[in-house]
Length: 493
Image (cartoon, rainbow, N blue to C red):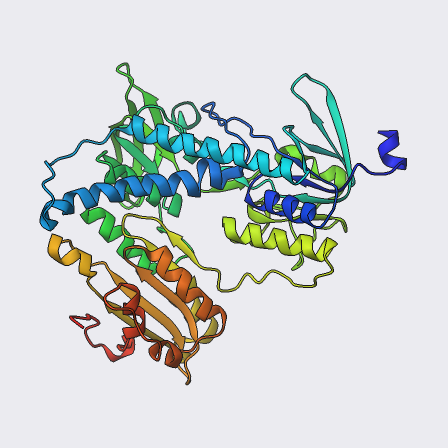
């Protein structure tokens, strides 16, 4: 340790965390000719699930989630197929084991790809659990039990978060799983209770229902908190009408394993105060995430965290309370928990540190999509946020229901396909937020996000020619204001 305190440091940049943000930082710094190391370690979940390099998104998040969502969408398309002339015998059974193996193999290929990329860029990778010794040095234990000390001029913390367990509930830890486990199950989870109302909860319940499993969502209070609440209620309506069961206003109190191996869950209905029970094969906790900061010994380096959330406090330039230590991504207080924001924030940070740039990450108008069976894409402010910020009298909301052409021949229910644009009322009516519920919502939202980022007005959107016949076209056909009280249903061309 003496050498590290007095001598030259090992690296120009040390990145703690090999997820989306951390890898983006490391690769960007290496590209700029710096000496870089990445430290990454996955603490196995309470269930014992572990994975390789790449972080939450690659291993237990966006990537396997989207692939299983796609599996569920294919089930719907198979049911549509006979209407379009395909002679497909119904019903078509789904094989969880086959799907899981294919998804897991893809994830493993991504793990390998990340390792190769680091090697190609001469970034040193350490698979060790790092903790701070001082403000320039971290320590970790290698596989053989040997202690490794690493020092750097600059350190970036990008350790992300892990799912929260309700440890106050009897049996929660022993018998429940989280999103850390669901994608790595070898066998079907069977009849599943998903506890929580986050996008993680709804996405998991959605694809489980979609592949033919019995899925129930237990919601204590507000679904999709932080998202537009009108859109949120329509997401729930769609799921409920397509087979997902919901227990609203309920909170679990106990999980027990029955002699036959099933799980008996006891919960309280908070409106009536009555207790109820149900039997499931799997209980999935999706009640939020906690930052992975506990084992970092941040106090040794002097890095300040929020007393409420344990997330790291940073300024607008990702700087912590220590001048040469930075933090990005889900581990940071007040940042969106999204892969692309971590990547962009990381790249911009490294360009400021080593590339002479002064560009700062802009966290406004970040687009995102909830991959529920009917996808919900949004960018900008929710209707509630717009009203809170500007006042009801200064906000105009244009909206419409629509029917995707693809739904017509198959006779699919389109009652929740809906789009709305939240604008300032004063001309030219700057677009504050766009909300889209329907097929391929992510693809639609990504396109419009650029316009909104560039300061698009309602007038400009209305002058944009739509591509016919697409769902995206519905955005540029929005003529009806919520204030007018007219029927917002768009029919025909």
